[in-house]
Image (cartoon, rainbow, N blue to C red; front, side, top):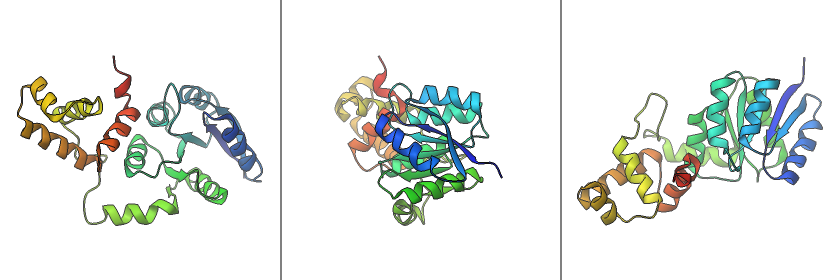
Length: 216
């Protein structure tokens, strides 16, 4: 059986080299290339067609969320495994929606990373044990955030979230959109519920991943 071929996308050189050592030490795996940003990772995936793309979420240029979505469009056979220190449900949900097959934390022991790589390479799904209980407890008994084929946010809800992320108050948003403050509060609450958000910080983090704060 051939080795599991892995691309490592991580912007910190020290972490990237450490990951390569851990993976290459396995008899059934090999790192065929590494990238320091999402755009390079996509180019390498198109050229090398690896089994697994190990994708950091927070990277300059093209972050892991957008890179995952683009990679799955051009290379659907490549399995994406998110590697991050973020425990937030929002990050998890958005990476899964973008097409990631697994989600593992940098804080977890190396053995979890290796389990995850093997699982997604074989066409399975993997969720870091440190998150599994939390996610199941939070989402059991109710629908989760945006799902494939599920409820999507309306254009107005997105517009309101964008303005919140940019630092505008409900009153300022209401004035700009010529709506009542109460209506803005409803749109904001609905959007946050759909995305599983609990605070303004969650909105800003989501906005960063979506690239909203880079808009001119």
